[in-house]
Amino acid sequence: MKLYSTILFLFLALFSSSIMAHEETQKVALEPELFSNQAGHITYEFQLIDLENKTLIKDSDLTVENEKLLHFIAYDSALKEFQHLHPIYTGKNWVIEFDLKRNGDYWIWAQGQLSRNKTDFSSSNKLSIMGGIEANPLPAKLQLTRSGNDSISSITLSSNKIIAKKEVMLNLKFLRTDGTTAIITNYLGAMAHVIAVTDDGDSITHVHVMNASKINEGMVHSTFATSGKYRLWIQFLDNNILRTVPLAVEVF
Ligand SMILES: [Cu+2]
Image (cartoon, rainbow, N blue to C red; front, top):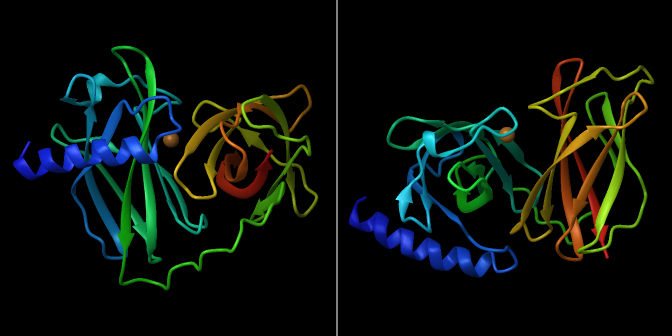
């Protein structure tokens, strides 16, 4: 690693420990290596650093989880733009290519599992995008909704109260806005994926939806660490088309 990388690494380690204060421990740092801040097609190269061993994490250091070695999630601070992608390892860096057409401050996360101790990690950094479409205005507060749709595919989440630090089981119904029956097939090893983010964007949870006994119904078990409003992005395949439905819930 170059000197500046080492300095950046130390900075990241400090920065991460403050923003991730409510996480158990910060195990892995995400260090950007090469990227552009210009809106459009972005090639983002980064390194993952095992903070315990002070080593770079290669593809061979990770376990395949939900069919991928590494999951990459990006969203803007308005919690409107969203991407879930899978970086590849080049032998030197991890690389992901994606399109961000809209300006804004983006959170980026890498999620994976270290093979050496089978522990999951979520590591974040930020990326400010300029030169594109006007940034989404920051909403005064997140508009709560337990049902939403992406094109004709829709989701309705059960209305049970969610309490911080208590496991909750939420039911999901997969519907269509035109009344036809959804055709749900597994996406990356699960009926659906739920990515939950606190309304300040600084904490992320990724949980999986399991089949319930009824057709086109699923259930998800989760424990929300803190009270407050959360954005949920629910991703699933309906008729083999990837859909992403944004919802928002309050945790008491
Ligand atoms: Cu993924």
